[in-house]
Image (cartoon, rainbow over all chains, first blue to last red; front, top):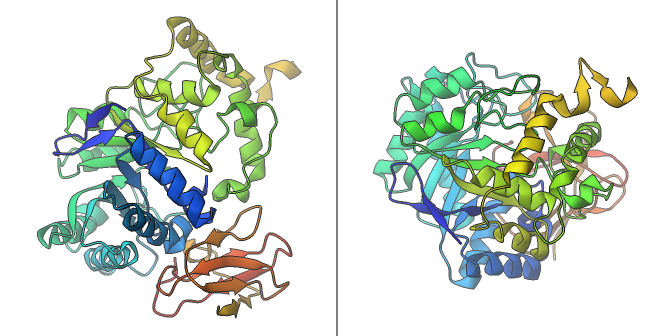
Length: 348
Length: 79
């Protein structure tokens, strides 16, 4: 396993980190034995970064993770999060403190290494969306804002570093926060289906969210990046590409949005040339592509079983994708995965 | 081993507070304690083997009968 420094902190994260959310499910749905075997194997292979949240398993991810580490006698880097909910807006700092105190109780730990605000930064606050409510930069930076709460937690020794997650975020708001130099770590979507966070826009490719080079921007300001959903919710896998079903432990938002999942699978099928026997699976190619970006500190894989853990960890140190594969990828992106203006090339 | 029947609800908030926990199979969550939550509609175990304080309050959809329930954990804020 190779390690990368997290921005301007004193932490070095394993290139492959362990995502503990609902989507893959090992931490919140597997048996105690399966959790311990999976986490233990990851630790033995060098994984030292675990990413959780009060939202993952509605508290259970933190509780189960704390139990696994106590059982194994290990204490790696732990990143958890704070989610601001409708009703918290009167005192965001206090909400952050309450949330982290509750997380520490579930983890049964005195401190965590990193806390991120889970809500995506937007230019304008919106508390009525069905997903994570959108916070505006003033909500982070203003009086009684999130940053005030995070700094209080740091003074109390409960948190070492902090940052925010950028899932469905608006890039101008993210950059405004990064430009303050106050944040140490962000989590960002960056994958073969939407690489906009890590590279210049590709002519012809459309994305639901344009992350507009957040990763190099963060790197230039001494802020680290963890990449979430590197396999695009499990669609960038040989199994999904060949029409296989989701793992029995898989859940999360894609369980409620199967049509979205199917659309992503169809995009992933355009990447089938990256599944090369003896070289890499599609999933491994997806991870190796992400690791080619020097601004990435850790790729946060979500795992359903031990085999998936080992498959992803093998990517660290395996090197970049071939030039030929990168040219092929560029062609797929420029062709917008075979679709234009809502139509399909194959239907033309 | 305490078993709690969930309270099936007709409505839930349309904002983030009403977000459903869902998965294709049950149980949707599995911990390492001795409390389980069964669907108030069909009896399917939705949340298995959690301990006191492990989970917060949230809405959940039963993968079997599709009923929506509130897992009510007094003292833990609804997410």
